[in-house]
Amino acid sequence: MNDRRVVVTGLGTTSPVGGDVPTTWSALLGGVSGIAPLTQPWAEQLGARIAGEVAVDPSEVLDRVKARRLDRSGQLAMVAATEAWADAGLAEGVVEPERLGVAVASGIGGVTTLLANYDALLEKGPRRVSPLAIPMLMPNGPAAAIGLALGAKAGVHTPVSACASGNEAIALGIDLIRLGRADVMVVGGTEAAVHPLPLAAFGQMMALSKRNDEPERASRPWDRGRDGFVMGEGAAVLVLESEEHARARGARVYAEAAGAGITADSHDIAQPDPAGLGATRAMGLALREAGMTPDDVHHVNAHATSTPQGDLAEATAIRAALGSAVEQVVVTSTKSMTGHLLGAAGALESVATVLALHERVVPPTINLEDPEDVGLDIADRRRDLPDGTLGALNNSFGFGGHNVALAFRSV
Image (tube, rainbow, N blue to C red; front, side, top):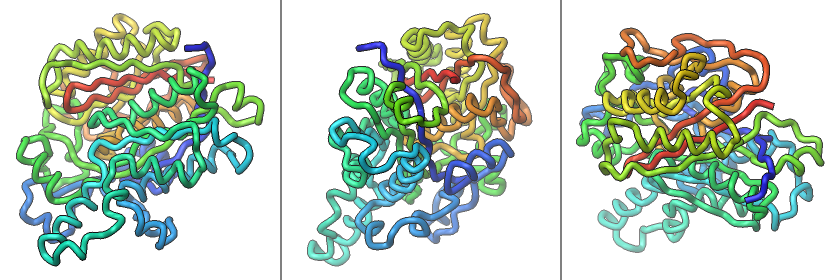
């Protein structure tokens, strides 16, 4: 690995609280919840009948013909990637195709395409299965579509590590730029799994909140009244560049993507290590790679999904990783507003972390009405960050014991 610095020059998203970055960020700062009742007839039979569906349907943004060739996860990814690319000010000819790569992740992939075509097969026979079903349902379909649209030839990648997938894609993008394999990486995550089968499956695991009568209050990380996470959908994409490439073209820089730490718990397929040892190590590795110490950290966007075990394990890990420096750190969980976007969660929360550093303000954790004493300064309202060079961490953890922590630094 060389010592090339990697910076963030473009942001894009579509989320339960906004159809683009400005509306999403404004909603997060305002403490607006994107969780609502599911109105589809199939939802009536479910125990958990709430979710965070995207605020703007991709059909309102994308060309209809092109959209029909993509699974919903691919549609959401294309919306976010298009915004991020434009936000970075990149145009044709600015980046050599052989120096442009893509890493866009998904935890589940094109599940709605898979299930819809299986239903068609059973009900109407094999001739009614779409000839586009395979490229639409492939987990790498969104990344491939973005790569085709941008002409990326340095490699197109799709990490799949459950709810850590989005952050792992960003970590891969940092690595590839530092290794000299690309100058620009389009990275992030996407997920579109608001469907009866995933919701029923998570429900059978007792993982979902059943606060159906108060959906906007259902996602409540670190609150004693939490009873599970809320499913969300959406996508978020960041444009990463080597600093020299960004400076050479006069790009606006949001923050430095300074380091990443990736570990595995090897504890349980679904439950986190209660001591948070793997998460602690991931944060430590991210700081070491970034050349940072705990004293450099002023903000953590936590994974904090609103599950009883996960929230406490992460709080333990944050305290262990940061030691006495934790007293200066403002912690938040934007999942309290967006719900849990699974494979897209880390990418969306990386966008929020970058903007928190860029604008020196941390979004609140809403619904923190009866907080557990977890030894953290959790922002129950928007909080200002100090001047100077600041560091921040964004955590993502996934079923299977996947842990990814990203370190960002203000510029």
